[in-house]
Length: 267
Image (cartoon, rainbow, N blue to C red):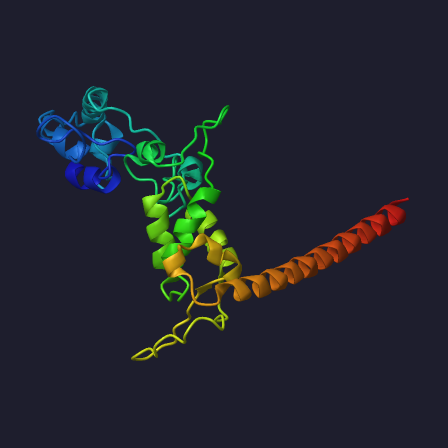
């Protein structure tokens, strides 16, 4: 009678359960651990639970002993902390984005600062911030850059840029790319022979040094009749600069007109 009742009503042990066999943690049914001790107490035979044959409740005398044993057992078991579902939901999931504390800058490997200081043409700037070191492409390095491109041109644009920045760490890839665009042209000068035809699939684009920069090449690297080509390219470059200045002036004028209209509308 008592065993059936206990296993039906308190099998889960409520919010707390008894200790396991090693005396640590949870996992043992609380009622099962005290059943033997409760059943050793004889029934009184006088209470209403002993007299009524249809009841499933235990004797009052056994019930008092059972209550004392449960209290004694539960003292040994630590109280489980209730789960805070709101805090659990607010906690970011493992798949959520976690910002990186410190991002490594591309191309700056071990010994990068030392390579910059030991490179030719390096000048330590005064009052430089603790952030990025100012990087540029000095004018004295332009002849070497032009020689890497060569008057006959190159179809290895990124190889030239990366090789140059590797040999001159004080120059950034961005600055080298901008300067490469200024120094080269896709139109082959008339004094340069056509390049050999590419074998295989794919298209190859050749970049040539602009004739106005031929003076930066050594004499044996300059093509025949380079002076006339340089003079013609210089005139073309002047026209390009004038066209860019006109476009910029028109853009600035349009922007000023838009600002004036906005100010007039607000008034």
